[in-house]
Amino acid sequence: MTVPQALLEPPFLLVKSGVTEEDFYRLADEDLDAEFLDGRIVMYSPASHPHEDLFAFLLALLRNYVDSTGLGSVLGSRYPMRLDPRWSPEPDLLFVRKERMSLVTKQRLEGAADLVIEIVSEHHAELDYDDKRPRYQAHRIPEIWIVDPQERVVVADVLASAGYETRSLTSGRLDSAALAGFWLDAEWLWRRPLPSTVACFRQILPGA
Picture 1 (tube, one colour):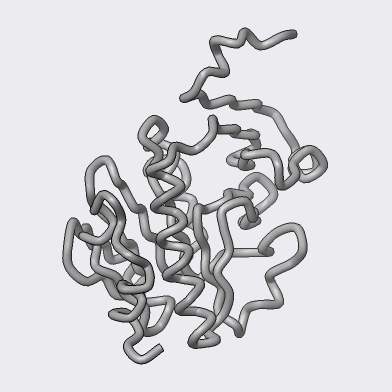
Picture 2 (picture 1 turned 30 degrees about the vertical axis):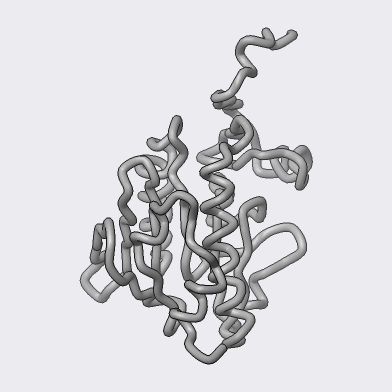
């Protein structure tokens, strides 16, 4: 069956159901923009420039911070996080503490990260909010950030003894619970153009 060209004009979302975990890892490689969500292969249209610009901004801040502090590893966005045999999502960014680096394998993370960050797509927001966020909470990921450029809000879930505590910020300082000492000002994320990562990093970690 040939897929009509019009169906592949961005934005698009292709879903193939009834797929086994073995099929996904056999078919998927670093060139396939797809996730394994509840026994489905979900494939996306190419990311927009604003999405990739924000991804690169956050990646630069996180990687520089982790490189400077030696607290662990930051990965994304094509690296699967295997939560169970039906779920291997690929968060835009994830952080793993150095004490848990044995879970980082060549093909995937064998279990939950300590921090996951999802940048909400303009056209598929429900995947992050309705599909992936509840699954992350079910697997008790210590910290979850949903960065929503359309609504200009960061929704941060932090696991506490009584369950998840949630903050929604449009501006102001957001401190990470899982990545000790890391913070950012949510307002940075909505600027166009985005601010200098060098200038922001100097605020996050003075003297670095």
